Length: 264
Image (cartoon, rainbow, N blue to C red):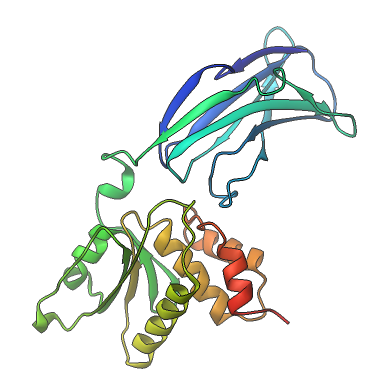
């Protein structure tokens, strides 16, 4: 039934962190209720803990030969070496695998590309009133952008502002890459600092890291979870993604937040 897969198994593919890893699977017949998935241990937006998991592929069309074409993929959110394979089945039937046991493809994820979109200018999105998630470029232009409080989550980056700018600044550095959990204490300190700035009348509080996606996105999710005790973690993530679709949570974020701010 399997006609074609790209990228194939038993080969190494490289991607930059946050670069799309897309795949195509072609099956030899148009079978109703067919499910096709990538099976991978790569870390991405929907799999911050990095276990083996499925990424569903979408049916696109029949080609001229009457074969069914499925496509899809994900954006890796951590550097490292990972594996992937493919599986397919008719709904309700056992899965069939594209290769033999452990006959997988390899995916090497490199540091983010220097020309990535978030390096091209200031990016900052209001996730809650007065609270923004953004990148280092936005933080570096805080005075021009009217930002009056900056929380820096990037351990590798430091900023300073002229006293006359009256910009409150706090650094709570943590490691890049979704595989690195954010410490419970740091999450609490970040939330407390944001609350303090709001109480002091700051109007534009920027939470940033390098890209404005992972570390700052995770703290943004944490602050939303704290502010809305009636929301589940899943509801909080969906809300954050409506505001900024590229946010990805760091490993163990859900467990940390449910431990720090338990739901009734």
